[in-house]
Image (cartoon, rainbow, N blue to C red; front, side, top):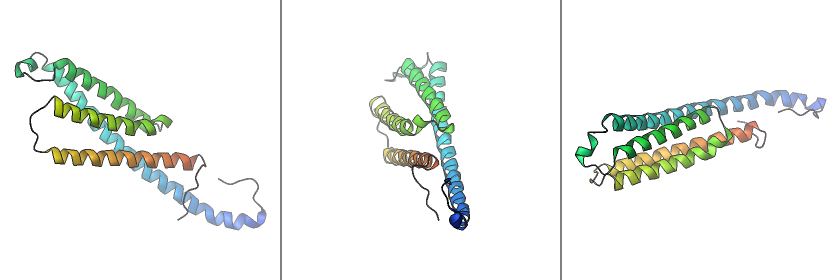
Length: 168
């Protein structure tokens, strides 16, 4: 951002540096937009998955007790509805770049991972052969969420003038 205290002799340097600064802002915005859209798509996938979980629990409400599952239909339906509500709220917050979205999104991702593993290990005691793959994907997704939120925080700091963007 240009300050009003610039002297005439510095105008040439300012004019030359403006395209570089504009390019930096444009490339930062483009990268954040792509990562934000990808993050929202991931969140919508998990939201949809939990919507299917809740819907299946409601549709098969009377059939599920015959399989002697540890998870009752009310638990399956309520947990699915809960995570759908959280997912939709987070998607809207990230899309609208709400200030609290950056700090809450990673926390919710960690809480969802903890809930997923507790649900998987406690309520589904059957040995799972693919647990290393699932754990690896979980760690990669958490890393992606962390990096995306970190980049979004950086963008907010640059846009507010707290940090100057790199001139490349």
